[in-house]
Every structure is written in C-alpha cells, then in structure tokens.
Amino acid sequence: MIEQRYKPVTITPNFYQLGTHDFPVYLSMGDDGMIIEGGTGAFFPLIVEQVKYLGIEPQRIKYLALTHTHPDHIGAVPHLKKLWPHLKVMGSAGAAKVLKRLSEKPEALKEFLAADRAISLIRLNKGEIAELPVELDHYVFDVDHVLEEGEDIKLSKDIVWSVYHTPGHSLCHIALNDENEGTLVIGDSTGFYVAGKDALWPNYFESLENYCHSIQKLSTLPADRLVLSHNGVVSTGARAYFEKVMKVTEAYHTEMLERVANGEDIEKIATDKAQWVNSITDIQTYDVMYNMAKLLIRRSHTASKKHNLFTLPYA
Image (tube, rainbow, N blue to C red; front, side):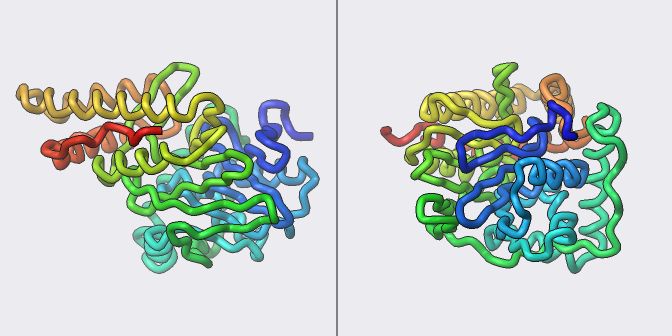
C-alpha cells in the first residue's frame, strides 16, 4: 500500500503529479501517455508504484519528455528505460547532445552519478527513501526524438502538447503547453519557487538575457496553471506570477552588480546567497548551492550592459 504522503495528485482528469513535492514528475494521459521530467534515481521506484496505484498500464505510457538535463531532472531515466524499454525519450537538440555525452564519456557519467547519489543521500537521511538507488550495469540516456520549436506531441484528439524552447536556466530547456486544458509546463525556466515561504530564487545559470526572453515568451501563452519542476503547480494568476518572477530577478541581478561594484568579495556574496537558499530548501547540498550562487554572479556581470530585460509584453 502506497503511503498517504506519496499518493499521486490529480491536477486535471488527464494530468497527474507523481514523485514528491520537491521532486515531481508529471503524467499526461490521452490515448497515449507521456511522463514529463526525468526525476531522480531516488524516486524511480516511487514513480513506478504511483503509476501502478493509478491503475495505468505502463505500455500505454509511450513517451518521456525532458524539460532539461540537469542531474536532478534525469536521474530516473535509465531506470525507467530498463524497466519500460518501449519508452521514447524526448528532449531538445541540446538535451540530446548532453545525454549522448553521458552515454559515451565515462567521466561525465561518473560526475552525474555522484550528483544523483548526493541527492539520494539527502532523501535517505530525511526518511523519504529506505535505500539508495540500485546501480545499473549500463546507463542509457539517449534521446530517441529531438523536439523542435513549435512541434506538437499528440496524445489524443484533445491532449496535444506544443513545444517551446526556453533557454536561460539551461541551454537545453523547453516548456510544454497543452492549450486545451490550460496547462503550461514551465519546468525551471522561472527559477526555484517555494510558494509556502513566498521565496523565489532566480536561476539564470546559462544566460540572464535568454532567461528573461524565455519568460517573456511564456507570459504570452494562455494558461490556467503553471507546472513547475519543483514544488508543484501555480494554479492562480499566471500573469501575476510572471510579473513577480521578473521583479525578483531584476532585484537579484541589481543586488549582485551593486555588491560587486562596492568591492564586496565574490566569495562572501555567494556564501550569503547559498545560506539563504539552504534556508528555503534542502534539495541539493550546500556546496552545489554555493557554486550555483557564484555562477549567477558571473551571469549578472555578463548581462550588466543589457537593457529592457525585465519588462513583460502586454497581456
């Protein structure tokens, strides 16, 4: 019997949240099914159990679509592919390139496995899993189908997902929009949001300029709900959420530039930010948070002379 805290969440009659609140994956069901997000190795068994709980035959789930390829979003992929080899993994051309490297370069795979294990150890210590993920003899990540901008993924007559490239958080990031149901999967394209703490950490790890342009693009799409890669779904006020993201991002960017301009040590700035992020979430180790905070300082510096980044198009 599945624990109450791990029961799937029905978002619409055709769309479910699996995994956990911190590390969700999603399942869209039409005539065919599609998993969205690649999860973590820690929660692969849970995803399988949740599909079973819903009474859905795994053979109906034909696709696994990746929003992007950061380690905490692909960890369950090789496990799911081994159990359900019929699954077709889909992602952007950038995602295909990253995952091909994992399959071909032992050093890249070793780095990924260390990151996935670090996440699993945190979940183990929190009592969310009983044991670490089983090591596989062979890890398969390859993208079976490259998703292009504007492409439609048709699961049934009424369940159709349109693809939008949304770089900024990562170069390979995409969003998926089911206009019929009003569901827009934005992944990590707007950063890390914790609604219960009203906290938002901008995550423009690849490029601040691309990050803002992607948010501007997403803000023009009609949506009743915004589906995040962490911490669930924003179900009220899509426009207001995007406005909030831009306001917080501008403030964060301005703070980084001003602190550096005032001669403050970059290590100190990154330490402050990593400590703040650790106060709102424990999804990664402190060292990871510190390195990402340091990266954002560099990205802000690169975009220091860019203008009009933070204004949304008219609704």
